[in-house]
Length: 293
Length: 277
Image 1 (cartoon, rainbow over the protein chains, first blue to last red):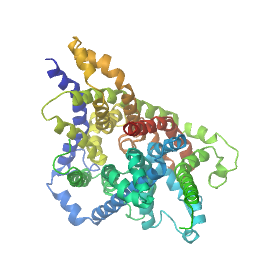
Image 2 (image 1 turned 120 degrees about the horizontal axis):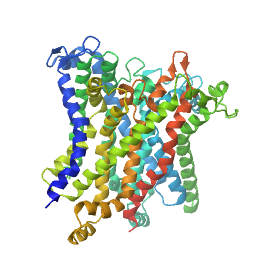
Image 3 (image 1 turned 180 degrees about the horizontal axis):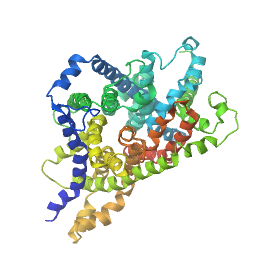
Image 4 (image 1 turned 30 degrees about the vertical axis):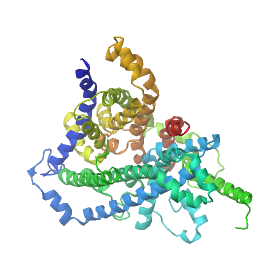
């Protein structure tokens, strides 16, 4: 039957493109990470140095070790933060009715907004002299009036996480609203008749039912948090000092301001391996024993 | 416990209302503030005032030397548009194949395609920079469309496969017993029902490539610069030109407004379908 050829033919363009756009570059990056290649000095790789770049990263570069800690802080904070924020939004807006469906339209906007634009504008909003966020926060919390939000390392990281939450929370909530609305209403009704408070039924019925969606949202968000670049570049510039310099940002700096291609590739590769490791653990937890398909 | 259930209901209703209002203010406020800033005269840009004479001066300024936002806008539209036009049909063909045919290693292959999404863009962009340098594709539409396909394809395949999976296969089988060829079945039966899914996948692909910053920052320089990258050029030596960023930002945001309506519908429609049974 002709389907035998057709099924591969239909798939071929996509597989070729995916290979050309991801798998081939990945292999290429792997090879470069074993090379000494400073673009400022040479147009071609100069030396095969085997594991030198990786050795330098882990034993000879405090900035790299710092980027590991920064990445861990950001990923944990933003993944947890965005999922919790998304859950709160979902609990507020998971109702039927015209007003609610209009409100839900708004939820797409932060996600559809370019992260680059969000980074630049939030930077202005946080300016201590003429920023709108700064003005509002100073009015609400006078004891924080003296804070230079992006000038202190703790606050810069906090705002990096909050900026990311603003982008992702509403989007994740759309996933969660789907889950919430599909909880049969008679189950909730029954528990109310039995005298359970809203608080109890949240913990005993809603949360357990929502767990699968919450878990997937958390895994997805973790992966995207590892990949985040735009906010660091435009909101904090990795600073103050190196307090928000994530691995992605550090690899970028090594590659495109220091033009050290070999070292940058090595860092990027460590990041990729880390991501593979983390996702493998997650998927093992999510789909125990090969239920993945 | 002194409150009657009815009073309690009222209070809860009010609290919910306040919470929703705060939420909407937090989500919409920043976007509204960007719009407002874009039409403020320079003298009011660095103040909190809500009362000012609206002006289009900032928009005039960004289209002129040295920013040329008009050219960048064209680049953004062309690159995102081409990415969608190439990416979606390619993804649709693959998605159909993944959904309908049995083959060896299908699961592994499908998971492999999805797994490419876990690869951080910074890993991909370094070799691309070096490759494009040799192929003379730096700073071109071709190069940008190529790399944008890497963001878009796996996602679109996954989304479209899910969509095709929900279409009953019986109609196709019936048509084929009547002697129609597979390609004809795809064109006449599958394609018409898949249009809404194709539309949503197209929208998502457009958003992703429209908002891409990292690839454009590294792989473009002058000719193929896109809108998000222009934003970083407003951190100038004479200071940060916030009003010009806001005006450019307005152009970045406009298509997203049109789009967000459809995206929301897709999500909630898909979600509520199951529960209304």
